[in-house]
Length: 324
Image (cartoon, rainbow, N blue to C red; front, top):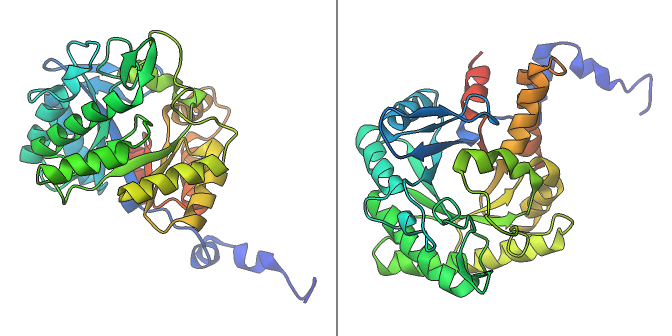
């Protein structure tokens, strides 16, 4: 049938019709809220490039986690800023490291929220790269040992899930084997499987104080034009034991999210990264867009593309919006 018998607008004419036939439904259950924990006490330092986000000491983080849980958000993702950095990134796996202490405190004070720990070294190394340096390059295989040691340390502190993000070849296998050997077989891995060398991480560099001191990360993060390679990367992580796979960033890679959804049957996460967040915040501040509508439209697009889990700095704002 064609017009005038076929009139799609019939089912758009009011909100009740639109709700009834809506194809994609965003839920608070889909969200993970990233947080940045730093050394010290009573620290809550604004991140200028990410309005509404802060570097916070453990005491403030616990309060933020409690508020996050009260909004119904099921999980947080922790990034740590150590008091000191060194070539090896030893603060990442120290028994009393910033993440280890924070995880223990959260699990004691807010036990019924999932604590996911980002598993990388860039915040902890004096050179700002995600691995060990040999001859001015990131050495893949020695980095695996440090990532594995860090994963065990985070699990021992009480992390519910670890999320290796260094983009080293074989990182998922190394982490899985290390966790299993230490009795943490039940700790799942959310793998940053297709993580692109993106300009959209810019504000995060301020938040995590993790900008590389020389060169860039293009030799280990993925080349943005590549989609087939992303499927190979994801496939390798699946074979190595990933429980959840991830595409990062989200907005410029919705096509990659869709391909991953069609080709793999594991839970799929997408990271709505700092630059994507900050662009909306900046445009809304200038009055160019409706910030809340843009937020919800973007998050819905990520869900529509196929993501089951959305890591986003909008998590708490979106949860509040969905309550209204």
